[in-house]
Image (cartoon, rainbow, N blue to C red):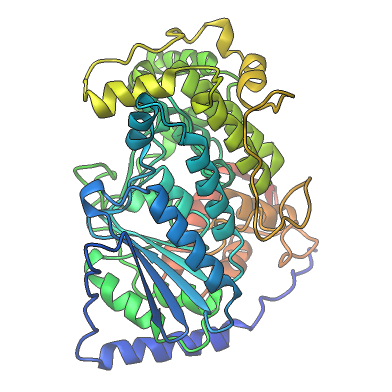
Length: 504
């Protein structure tokens, strides 16, 4: 006889009432105010709307790529908002083409060619802004409509509520240009299921539309046409909390319009990272080196089946990427997953950036890649050095020594993190919360199965008990229940009485 676990909390009722009120208001309104375009001279536009504060990136010709002026403006304003009791909600936006396509690395390399040494100062300022957003201390919504890459991930991934649309294109494409993911992104990628984060970091693969949501990079998925109304309704919340904000955004949830897997041509379809492909991804990207990953992909391709084409595609991506960039990406990802600390991830990022762009850098691949692909716009493979994945310089030990270790003569600047970290070592208190307002994660389901969740009791559960207790009532209940059931089917076994055990 197995005892029932503790009942679900009833605190959702107040949240549900607030959301219903906002929903009624939305439907009664004849129209929502259109979002005014900011003046062309403002690279970042800021608005105060009741208890909400909104920033809009406004560099459309560069797909809202961040330059230092934008970073400085954002840091000053977000600092003021963090300290203001009048600010209770922050909303970040771009435009319909791009939330933010990254940092202006082309400008950095052009400046480098002119004798300017601005890269490390740029990265320092950017990483300090990434920390500030990760420690905002109040609800933050990032509307990641359009392109969100590199530096755009650094602005949006710290947001507990991240809203994707069918126009969203997410990537950490740094290995394409001889660099590796930075901006603290590895801290968040490491909280995705299995080895999905390693795959994204190493290959720079683009993810489209609904897949951004289903893989956990976004917490919500809405129609692009509803964004103006959604933001308007958010700014009408008198006392916003993460629960009321998340519940309100969930009322805009849209179902898939096609069963065709998500791609550039069909962004509204379900994620293609399922079934045999997902198994193959974890198998390959759990390897300890990029050479081993590449070889594992070759084995999967040779075996045939559903995952073979996918594996060959990943090998093709890796063939074009910087071997050094991929090796650094993998080591930095593994460090973030082990460390569970945003400040450690960012401190690693500044060491890494110094190895790529500092005065005594360990490689010229960053300069080579940006010049070849962004300045000269060549379509061929860049002349990476080293060029082969089996080069001794790409071993995990060599990469750690060259890119992730602060030596006595290191030129890496010290990050001035504000607010000051509560502790220098050990996991963050925020670790594990990245997926809290989205679809159920494998870690969440596992915690319920093994009794480690704060809301779980001390005894085993059957599948229907887990689903009943884990899934919240609301507009996404069916989708959340389906997602949790998929995780159970893949990762759990049932004993003779039907109780769940997590596969080891």
